[in-house]
Image 1 (cartoon, rainbow, N blue to C red):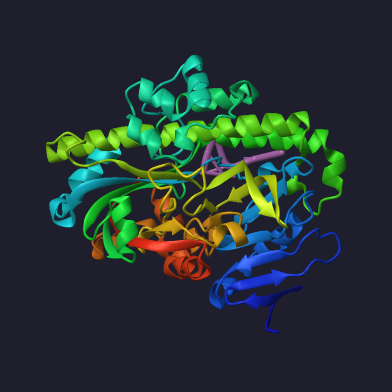
Image 2: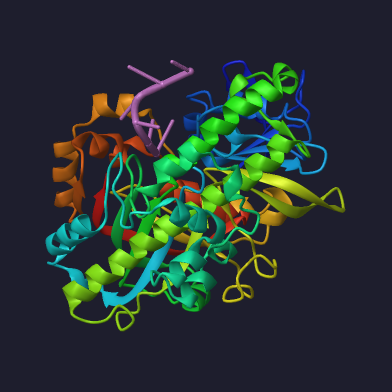
Amino acid sequence: MTTFEAGNITLHKVREHVWEIPPEDGMRVPARVFASERLLEEIADDKSLQQLKNTTHLPGIEKYAICMPDGHQGYGFPVGGVAAIDAENGCISPGAVGYDINCGVRMVKTNLTYDDVSGMEEELVEALFDAVPTGLGGGGIVQGDRDTVDAVLERGVDWAREEGYAVKSDLEHCEDEGVRPDADPSAVSQKAKDRGRNQLGSLGSGNHFLEVQRVTDVFDADIADAYGLEADQIVILIHCGSRGLGHQVCNDYLRDIEQAHSGLLSKLPDKELAAAPAGSQLAEDYYGAMCAAINFAWVNRQLITHQTRTVFADVFGEPWEDLGMELLYDVAHNIAKKEVHDVDGEDKELYVHRKGATRAFPAGRPEVPSAYRDVGQPVIIPGSMGAGSYVLCGGEQSLDISFGSTAHGAGRLMSRTQAKDEFWGGDVQDDLRGQEVYVKAESGATIAEEAPGVYKDVDEVVSVSDALGIGDKVVRVAPVCNIKG
DNA sequence: ATGTAC
């Protein structure tokens, strides 16, 4: 049997792209890493594998903890991690969801081709930068009062539709139709709501961006056709999350859960994995608050979509409907959701924690919107500003081996601090312009932190997903121009 | 990721 030695952790190769850490002291289940050997070496370079092992100590965890090919270390649990935990007898852990609740990505289609936008990059970027608030701190497209924030938390994209920022088809092309029914705004602290009220419709900082892209490769013509994608088409990717509101929700519940469930915590190897037992008041409250933050993030991306449509209509002199600016799909990258999965031949309700992982349901699952139920859901995987991104289709194997999940991006290779040592924003921007990618950011430091060289190889990440059959390649897109915090 | 800090 082939093994891989990572410090004091030994992984056994189960088969191509599947590595397992067998259970030992305190691990309730094994841990699995889905990766090529090269990606595994990169994953083994930080604390990801130890964090993955730690997660297997959580009560009620089923089958195995998973690290996707884009995994890297995060708060308590790797970014790129999936943990499915019994929703009746297990627990829920905010650290296994992440600070940026429903950080996620949506793709907006157009009927423009690369020739239509070539030469207009600067004009587009300047107009988008003016229309979409970026960077840290406050300032959003909508200035909400307390009632607005409550309505957003409760009703998600349906609120945006009522206010004229969304159309019906936007809801039909969003995970959960843009509304998480389990949202409980009363479980969100006033402090979190106050942080959110002037951030409604704002990109934020870090790896968040709005990017205009062109389709360069079509791998599956039938599915591309079902998704309305074709070679040379211009599409727009919007990547952002729940800003200060989601961050505050995570922080509030981590502190409360650490205190109220210190007994459970004392049996876990890392304080950052603090978890609330299923059925406890805090488990219910966190779940309701997290679902509300999910709605907030969807509205955030919807408001940015609205602005983007307005900008394109101005620049190209046609209504956005005539430019074909429909939503392909909106996927969450940081969530925990109650889902029913087969465990040892029995249907079980689980809290599926996906932190830096994407739901990748194949054809037939009832949660997939009817527009895609016969094909499988679109899975959107942003790469870096230089490398480009992918649209995949939820794979047949995902329900068997990954609780209906796949990777979520390229995955970092180094910390932000290290990135700023290795790169300078201005140089990165110049290099990108040499590749005909026009980037504008609020801060040079952000460009350095997000330089293409700080990311793993997105082609390799996606090829692992495709080879395992958990998310299948549909199209590849290349960046044209990009705005960031 | 984040009013970049318990």
